[in-house]
Image (cartoon, rainbow, N blue to C red):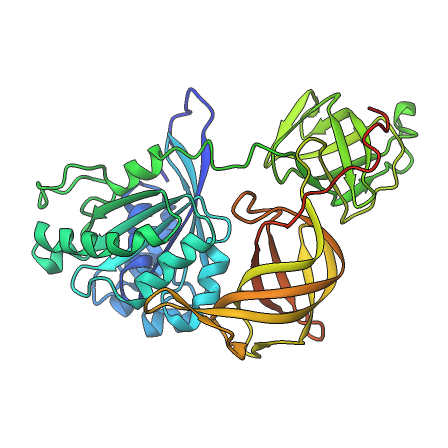
Length: 441
């Protein structure tokens, strides 16, 4: 692989996923990005050449870079989520190639759940179909900040500007109903590489950036929630047999910051006890620091000895989260056994796992017209709908729209430990009110 020069400034990381209907060219697009950006190892190139006569009709099949399952190559479809990594001098990338078939919608949700950007591919011949609307709606539900509509296979549409504009106009008829603020339309040919890494000479009417240039330049600095400090406690850090005498009484609380900024001396509230203290020390990967921010992993030491365990949360005193055992959420159902009222599950939220029961199913989303179907009897595999839950103990959470980390959860089937559903919480009715706001402050 060609080595890239070291950048003069820190390189940030963009996570993105590709989605769209079957045969829209998702895997081929990722293969083209890797191939044309010189991000492949020699053994990968050799493997592509060896498989050309088997799966590519004598031509290199770029989809084989991501379609790793034998069933995927035989059927020519993506089934599982495939992750690939590459970098340019401007940015590092993690790609999730997600399935297009409606049967694997749950896999698309999994791959897109942590994405900064989503690429929805549309076949220029087929235009906007139900899966296009479905995947765009899911990207909106998951609050993915940036969307690229890549109109693929322009080579099979005679590189027509008129066809590109027709698809763009049809998309824009339903985009206002979704909560996506940054949308970019790019005409491409993943098979030939037009407008993927290099500008196309066959579409002179398009004056925008190539796909790679847009991925390198899209602003993601404000994607992370930097308001309202949240630290779900993953581990109580007590060194065993410390060689340093100063660590003999060390007691820190470790986890990944799920929102906001924390500084030494900052007052924080512990949930669920609602006791307050101040941050005495912050330890990051490279040692003590004066401040840390989302999504860093840190260990906090407080000025007071509070009874804090895994699953608890430390939060900003002025803007605490909500706390409730009555939850209202949107859920994508991922299990063959349908979700029904009265069913019991384990609910994992941040670092806490509690028992939960489904108290009602409010509606189910119809992807043909993006309208909710009220009061269905159940949610089947790959359905998305609104439900209400009651948990065995209150959760400390934010609405998913304001914090994707503290506003999400998964439902687990108790007998098998299989992930049954992924949920996005509506904002809590009331925020936590500190009962001991003068404690150590």
